Length: 115
Image 1 (cartoon, rainbow, N blue to C red):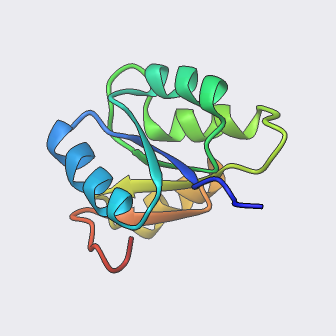
Image 2: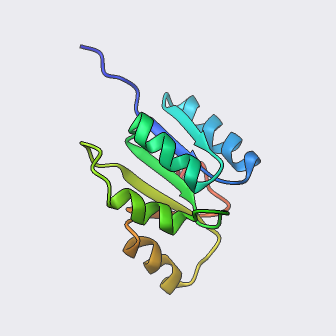
């Protein structure tokens, strides 16, 4: 029985970052969903139930930390891994990512091999 490709939701208010990350992930066989802010991401998460969400921290409306907290309060029927993208490097900021429910974080600019 063939398995379905893994759905990944990318969330970033920078269209160039969305295009770049989507290109890299699609080349690896993932189904990529895109959202330009946290509110749109919430709608896509509820409708599509991705397995992984990669979100920017700094966004208008609902930021990445708020989005992670919201996601951890939902019951999707499966665990949705979350990764926060950030330019911040202070250990206390990175701890905030984990406390908000992120499983991991990637520093911007994102390295393709690290992704």
